[in-house]
Length: 428
Image 1 (cartoon, rainbow, N blue to C red):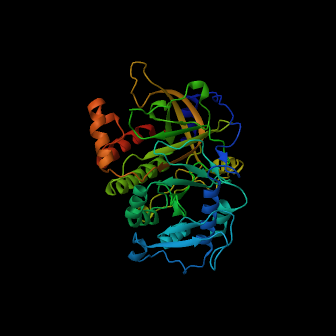
Image 2 (image 1 turned 90 degrees about the horizontal axis):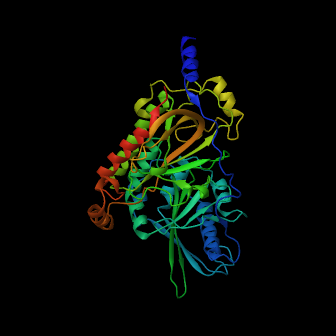
Image 3 (image 1 turned 180 degrees about the vertical axis):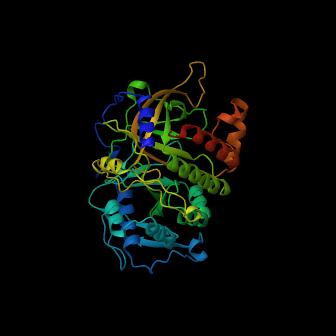
């Protein structure tokens, strides 16, 4: 009872901001790939290949995989002639070949991530077309979203394929050990090779879409902990909920309930240890949030992060009945809440000092909002190769070396954690 009174007093002493006004997105992200689109045939090839890969019978899945399953040479080529073959259906696209990398590993990952094979096929290969996001990223990769928003398909370079295959054993062991991991969930790695004169190869990876939710995502941030070039190029009038903002645009602190915050800190450390060991850098924390229309006191706890083996006996946070009832009445329900997904939280508005243009973390203002929070670590396929070393050397001559993205993985990991642990704090 005393704790409840104290909590009410604390909440009364803070300011609740009136909800910010945001442009309502007029349409869903991306352009539907219909007939006549330059990538229409590629989409058909991709859908035919996925249907074949996921639909073909496989061995009974055991989570204990032999090391041979992770061999980079473990790949399956399939020919898809337009007239069809013994194993493939006739189709309206041109002749192509399809490659599955480490198929048993990715089949097992899908099982580990509770992805139903039939649902997966319907999402990617159903009657609904994929949507291409408007422009390729800085890397030149293209992104496609499934119509139900569950999966994101990204074209990647040969070097990134090599990185993923190299780190696959460590990645698999990591996601198996820590079900609350914040790193990207990978579901498949494939290649389409067009025959004929072009002989073009398109490699792509299928990932979970972190911001797949019934909630409207009002703001999204891609955060690295570096300052050089880390601001959106759009004028204020053009920023809307689909705009991905960056470090120097960030004007909030994220406040998590005590036990969630402790689990968050542990998991960020584990995930960064993995990426550092695998010589990965340039990754980001993607954060999206939905402002709750009715400001409500945060429940005294949050739904449990399911305990991992190393802290099974710790007390785990639970959502109070009142909090659970509030979330059950909202679009995605309370059952799917876990670390980084549909998390009830508070955010506090911050402001930067005008004279500190490169100040990453603004000053707290005492203005709070109740939100539903989503976050995870993305872009984890960039290793610190010779290109990145040269970029680091070149930019270090022009800018403060601590402000640029391209730094050694150990340094990158430390800077990333230091920043993340400044903007995510315990809610008191």
